[in-house]
Length: 171
View 1: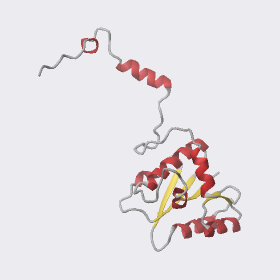
View 2: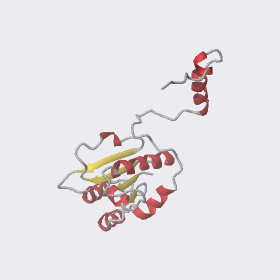
View 3: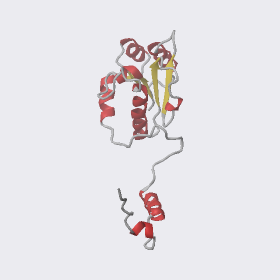
């Protein structure tokens, strides 16, 4: 099930995130990546007002689509435009507590989840965080792969550097 999210509206409801933080959008996207990974096959589209000049373009990916709406439009009008364009009304969930956005979603027959309720849902996630520098296709190593790498780099028994302590430095 795809989610259409009012980004700044949600940030205001999340403990540990602040709209005053210049990295608030990136922090929310990392959290939404974790959510998308936990939901398998669900798309997340988050809309933010404006955006900081030079904002990292690498926020998109891992099941999360990110849009910064530029003036004169704002996030609410973009969310309403997207709500009106939805064809599969029973498939989408709109996450917002903004009255205009919620009203448009309900009038169009979409399911609405308040930002407060969705924030509680995000707080229950128990999956590893996506690395901000991760690239599409990256995945965590399996325990067997970690073991293979450890064996490859483990010191050999006859390796003098591995068995002898480092020399003491004299002052």
